[in-house]
Amino acid sequence: MKRTGHFWARYFLAATVLIVSFSWLSWVMLDVVDQELESRQARAHREQLSEAIWRLDLWLAPLLGIEAARPVADYSSTVNPSVNFEQNSIGEWEPGQGFSLSPLFRAPSDYFQFHFEFGPPPAPKKKPDLAAVACSPYIPS
Image (cartoon, rainbow, N blue to C red; front, top):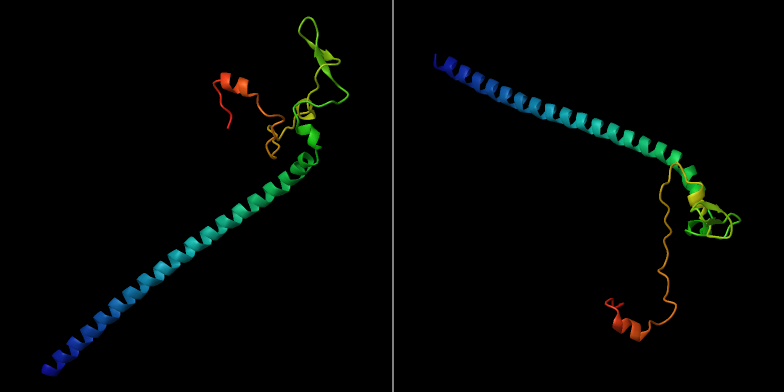
């Protein structure tokens, strides 16, 4: 009887070790499957973003090319083209010898509402008058 008790004790100990080890292995495998699923979802999301950026680039590149092909003078607010406007006596604007608007004002783009030109700041044309500076509340730096 003593031998049978040792046999069953060893059997239950081995069965317990196997159950615990297989439970741990199952837990690890489920975690690996979850990580794989998250990885696939993240990859699919990155692919969708990449395709969306690619489509946006294909749509926007020709429009940017048209805007970039404009002459530098178009970005100035007033230019000297053939069409000038002046205000008549009743306050309406008519073609004449007045100021002229930039082509960006005359033919606005449907896609680009704002136009910027980046460059160095303009250099001062002359030294400020010291008497005017002394009398003004603003002191230039």
